[in-house]
Image (cartoon, rainbow, N blue to C red; front, top):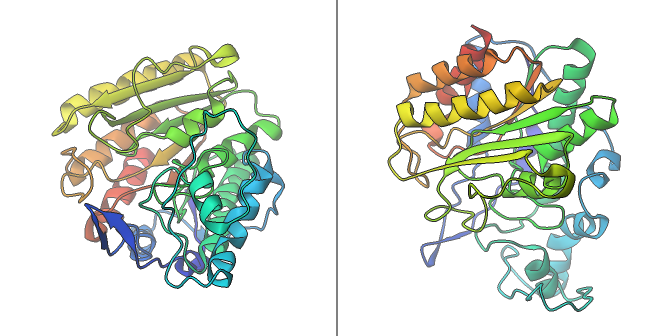
Amino acid sequence: MQGIYSSKHKLRNSKSELCGGEFVTPFETPQRVEYVLKEFNNRNIGKVVKPIDFGMGPLLKVHDSRYLDFIQSCHTEWQQAGNSGEAIAWCWPSRDTGSSFSPKDINAKLGYYSLSSDTSISYGTWEAALDSANVALTGTKLLIDNNSSAFSMCRPPGHHATRDMFGGYCFINNAAVAAQYLIDSGVSKVAVLDVDFHHCNGTQSIFYNRDDVMVCSVHGDPYSAFPYFSGYVNETGAGYGKGFNFNYPLPPNTGYSVWKRALCSALEVINNYGPDKLIVSLGSDTFKDDPISFFKLDSEDFFDYGYEISKLDVPTLFVMEGGYAVNDIGVNMVNVLQGFET
């Protein structure tokens, strides 16, 4: 299994996150990927390559062009408006007003394109997010060219980003961009399996009306966990996508035996769908010591569920998402890959 890594992820090194009513050091840090890369190399999982530049084309197949322009220019506009620090939304529109709105002021843009106030836009965010998408796309191309599996060490993560909104540390939806690239390359059916603790609201929304990309997510019950407003069992798709979206929300303190049953249910659904390629949004924040999650998986469990995924026997791209117990993230992420390769 080849790995794809870009040092440009370090350009995003935000210093502010709103959590519990105060500004804290962000949980999503550059060290996350560095620990994963080190563990990947230490275990000789495979060769690590640099990403290819795919340009804006694949991103525009998934994201609104005005939204991407905003992410690219936001930090500069923020500074030009006389602001210091990092750009954080503080005023949100009611999007159900029915009015046609094209924001001009940087504060209006931040609110319009933001789904949560936890995520600031700092210097280097655009460059890091753009290269994170290239990391995912390079893994996708390896999947197509070699019909084997790959691991894209994406940072920042992506699965919370919708077509035109950022939040939850996500700006470009790497898994969605990868899935769309597969479809555009002639792949008939793609499945996305999200095993991150948090629901993949962005990935779900992007493919909710489609039957060529199935989305399955095992996650913390949104009654108690971010992103709160999506990830419920009754969200099963719409239109052509009806019956192609599956959610498996689980309560606080869920241990591996219960979590695994939900995973195996999702794997059965995916197997029945019969995808040509599989994308796994891989978050290790299901780990028992993760600071912003509430599942209780041990490091050894990650081996086992990697093996369970391998039973699908489908060329698979692992796309890195969350995981905030930084000292353990490398071990947990690579345990999944090693279990898959067993």
